[in-house]
Length: 225
Image 1 (cartoon, helix red, strand yellow):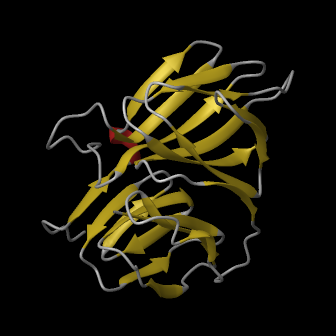
Image 2 (cartoon, rainbow, N blue to C red):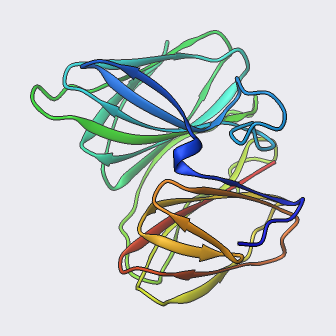
């Protein structure tokens, strides 16, 4: 593993956890509540990045102290996402992007009666308005752009892809800061070994070289201001 001053690894085992018995488990790879030098401190405009398992008929309630762009991607099941004005339902194979004003509640609800749901949430500090749901499917070695050039102050770009074992590729970012997070499987990214739920912060890279070390390995790249 080779790390420089322009890179930072966030291991799955180092994530901050919030656990409510019988209700939810949230693990934070990035948390705006952490201080400088903590592994899970914010990355540019990326102020929060988490994965949550939510029990049936339960909800996660969030309030941010700054304006945010929020990206939600379900991995298992579907969720209802509500704010003061809108209600959206997003399921596996879809991604939701929305704006939330500071101090306004955002709720994520599991309406299933007998099944857990599991989803990823990323929050970017930005007052630029964004809104939309996109559908996507994964084909080996063909990454998918979810929301291209969304804004210049929050989430700039989101790309997710699945690769065959031993496949080599490169990602060319359009902004100075990129966060790579392994959804499943294992990768070597810029000489760093990453496994499921590990993250890697990269700054100032003209291209990011990587290799999938397992079949059906999935990684998401987020570019931010």
